[in-house]
Length: 531
Image 1 (cartoon, helix red, strand yellow):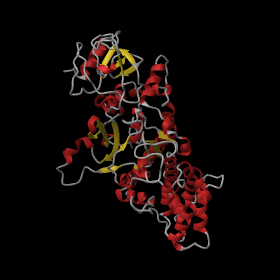
Image 2 (cartoon, one colour):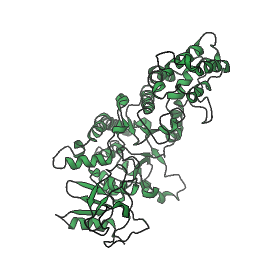
Image 3 (cartoon, one colour):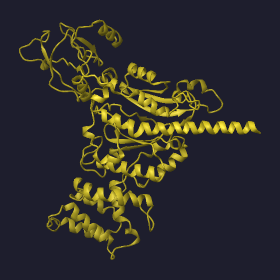
Image 4 (cartoon, helix red, strand yellow):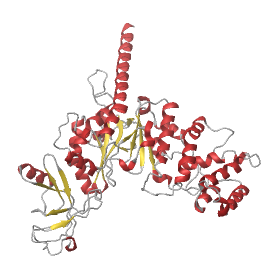
């Protein structure tokens, strides 16, 4: 049996001044024996460089070579075909080719036992979810952070829920010890969630959510019926504008229609975005009130088998929807998605549009035009633009303008562009959501904040990855930086934005709220004594 990681870490510390090797990963049941006791182990993440050649150390396993400034992770998979020709498998000088593949086991080790832990903003995260209650003001609720739920996902999808911490150091130590694949943040409960069992026998429902940010989860896979470039978990720059549209529409409504100010948008690390509304009045919404806010954004009424999923009834649509259509949806559909997604360029594409038209005579007329390739391709303009103009002209002409067709053009645009929310996530206080700055276990990308004012410039393909950050730390290891390790990496701008544009204004507002609430209570107390 191999020694536990803790023992190996101790051995590492004792081997000062010598090359240090640390075992990571989980052994397979099949053990490949050689003269040196080599074993097959879990492969390495695909994000790490392929075709690396190294000399096998005394213990040939999945290892991390560490020293003060550098961190290098290797994975050795022992098969005869891997070794160079002319070399013997039991030769300590044999060079082995590394074949990296996906592995949560490796990732969970790398994230919080590598130099990445120096980059993860533990203190900022705790300051955020404390909302000013970690200060020394007499109005602070010192139990606030300790009533917040944190959830860890370990390898093999093992969930560790209802954890609580009193400060950033406790959180950091627990994360370093458990090395989770993912960290989720839950609500603030009425009592410490870690001690909930002590209240389970109580007649009153003592253990219950008391506060929780209003959250929104938007996933690209929910758009699979209207994007033709990718499907499922795959995302590219052609379909990513759908997330840009969602951010623009939802953020504007949250600020202008509901009056919220402290809103954090975060890239999920793979195929979507998360929204955290952190104003005090948002955190204290009931489940019923959250459901009402979520329903405010709902326009999809059909199911996945419905041809028509959006119905805009009445002589006039809601001002929020009208503004979204005019300022965001229409331009993105006509100037970007229509061409980039080739929405009307194929029979499959235009049939989807025609099925949304309730008047069969109009749909048939357009179908005849579009099936005539000579007529549709005569213009030098893009075929998608030509066909869309034909569709609009026919639907909006006086000849065919009827109640059933009044909003057909707008409904088509809404169907292809309007944000698709996971309503259930927003309706309930006890729903978990992944913490910012986590590393996605499948892509290795960091869940960085997105500036809603410049969201059209956000490129998910350039988001920092774990291997990139480790390499940057290695390359810059000799340089001193009083502002912290993160400032020397590509994660620096993301953390700086999080602090300056979100955290600092939020904490300023929270402190003012705590001060005002405390003064109000003092005044009420004085008034009661005066009687």
